[in-house]
Length: 116
Image (cartoon, rainbow, N blue to C red; front, side, top):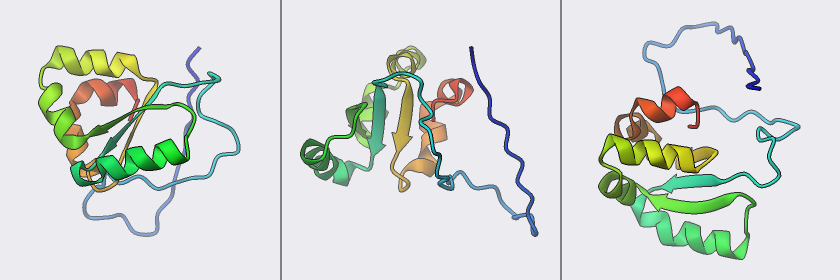
């Protein structure tokens, strides 16, 4: 029951180096079929408290866990632990300031599952 979306983008000039920074696209419908998805947010260490406070004031449905980069790096060092984390949540979101560091830290498990 997996649905795929294929998008072809034409560019005038091909960039010299690939970037891991996403470009936001507005979608009229949710990416998740479940009513209440289980989502996790990775943030920069310094902004963990501020993000948690903001989510308490203005809750966003589905965001059940906010984790700092240091927590992720220290608590999920083994492959088995990262695979278990990947299975716990429907999708993962990351602060754009730490996004370039995520592929090396998370490994191929997350990127094979397309949960990033």
